[in-house]
Image (tube, rainbow, N blue to C red; front, side):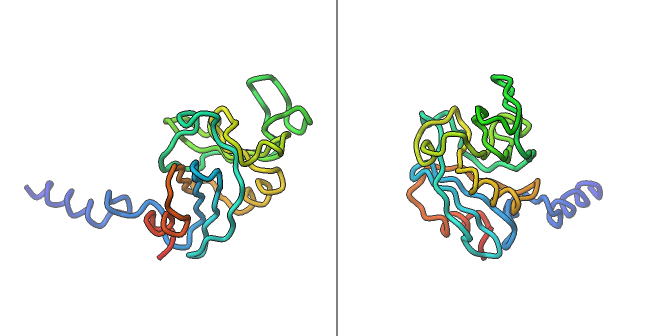
Length: 169
């Protein structure tokens, strides 16, 4: 009985309590809305920036949910077609911010640049989120490993989504 009480007490004060918000107010947070093909960067209790983004050419290709940034890379290597980072033929552009959608390790799904900037804002990718290279380079510098990213298809605005997730007080 004493052990059970100790476990319950520990769960109530634990920082990983299931009722605790996934994002702390003020922390960096990314939201991607597949309905509008826009990405928002939230920090310091405010929507800092909204950018056009390309998402999956069909709705199921870009997974929805709350994920965590696991990997970041400058001039990422494109494994699928053996194209080195920095090569103008590389479709991943200049930066990779990989997240753990579908229990992956951050190397399958990500926010990345593109060598085809005219595709940004469209339903075009194989599941990743495309940004213009200048936009992903700026975002890359603001997003540490461990940052949460919400991908959703919704008519809610970014402020409301960020508030619901705990990123804005």
